[in-house]
Image (tube, rainbow, N blue to C red):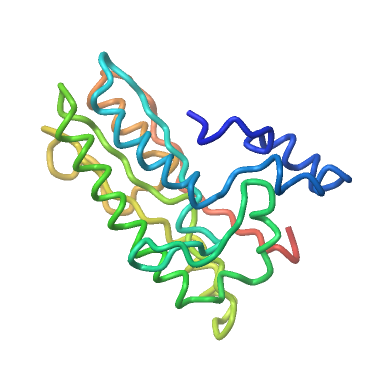
Amino acid sequence: IRCSRSVFANEYFRTLAEASWLKYFHDRASTDLAACHETNFRNLADQGARAGPKFVLAHLILPHHPYLFNEKGEVIHSASLSNQFDYQARLWEDRKQYAAQLQFVNARLLQVIDSITATSAVPPIIVLQSDHGPQLIDGLAKAEQRHVRLANFAAYLLPGAPAGLLPADTAPVNQFRLIFNHYFGTTFPALPQRQYYSSFTHP
């Protein structure tokens, strides 16, 4: 469910524009990023009321930079779908704005989850997980940088599941395998839990 009909909502065209003269049309052809995030939250909250079985995947860029919201959800910075990556220069290091936007995202997600659980005809399975931790560098040794970057967050709503279905050290590569095996009778084997780290300077 796209937040807009903008051509820049398509990653291919957005990348093409960034590398060509098309970038000069950003302001006319793109969509406000803060408004897009709010639309995504509303669309996600509405999924519980949709009829029938469903698998919903929502990839929310927040709390990733650019930092657009304060802790109250007020928009403090403007960016668009097309120029959001103009703000990549070490923005992880603005830890105060990162924490403020994270507080807003946490509160908004709790509202979304409450809406989904209240409107679902069948108790929903909800998996909330990050794809990586923050890219913090300043003041951290190399080992600490890797630890923070690989510190994924995960939380689950698993109706009727036995305690310990997902061990505390379960990596993202196995989370859905264990969930599908329990609820849907699949037999996916567990995969090795390996971690791969790549820096921007030495990919």
